[in-house]
Length: 125
Image 1 (tube, rainbow, N blue to C red):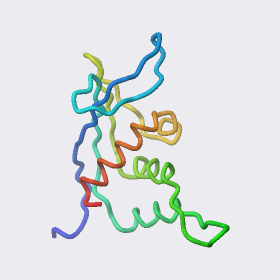
Image 2: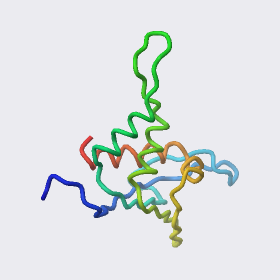
Image 3: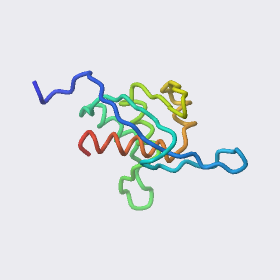
Image 4: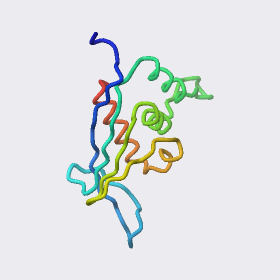
């Protein structure tokens, strides 16, 4: 039935350029014509997992009591829960990235944000 999420994976890619100063990586620039590519295989969003991610990423403001979303935590949890495979392609090299908390914390923030935003756009939100 079409209303249920199945375990099928879909693929999307993020193109980017590395910003280097004296051969030291200092940043990442997301670009449609980027020299490097990150290919992600992901599953669709389901209510239960998305609710848990939102709950784990939300804190209460101690001054006014309003809920605040910790965006970087939200992005990382999306990758950890919904991205099942990730490959980095640079020039002729293809390297698999193991998806775990340590590796996600080591990925440049602009890529974490781009992956999560692209996944949200593709899954309807």
